[in-house]
Image (cartoon, rainbow, N blue to C red; front, side, top):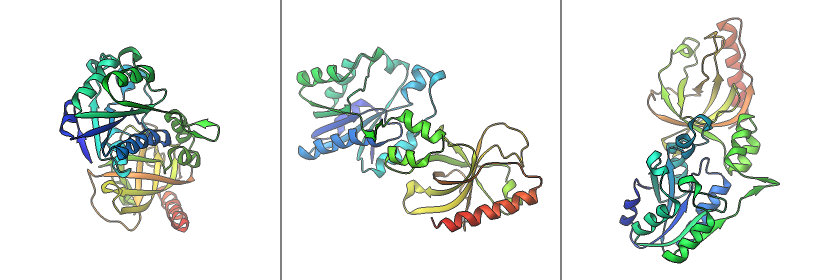
Length: 311
């Protein structure tokens, strides 16, 4: 997948270009519909699809205090886009200066940069530009003036519910992975970097990978059956047991939640690597044990239960 890091870089893409524009946090079914509309338009005119998105999430700049945890960090989002077959992504750095750009100026810059901008696909309710000055109406008028078509994709529903990042975030927070999968169209995953911990798991015979999660929404604390994917999920997948929480038996205090993963039948140094973790099923809630021996015996039972799932 080719990453374009400024609007001027669109000029390096020859021929007809069709854009899909949005924040796309989570890349849920609604986002996939917007991207799919651009892909279909490009196929009809023998053009190139470019997904236009932003880093960091605009809300983290415009209202940092109220900004929610992400469903997908930028790095994670790019991995998922590549798995969807997206060939080009324009990743715009969103800062205070960019936030001052009017909606019509933003679209004018995109049009000027492209050799032949033929189509723009967005969610029907998407707004953009300084003080939300742009919407589907403005985009349509600019399309008439600048010579591109506009596709406003209607919200996608799952049953009676409109699919949204907010609804998915709520389902993840409740640990409802069945609902999350329906809204996303895929399993819910988080991306984290393996960092060095206190290596206390090794003393119990269960060495764990400690993950620094990329500011993504986590489910409730507990012990989970998980699948860990390495190298963007290209066939290197490992079943494991994850503890998400405060490690009350080992730490004794509540500080910040930790995500630790014990990978079955695995013995490699992976510090600094990224793992994409799929939460398959909660095994039990996190609890404090009277002794390390009791904890060790429980982990053995947890491992057996996960292995019996046959994942």
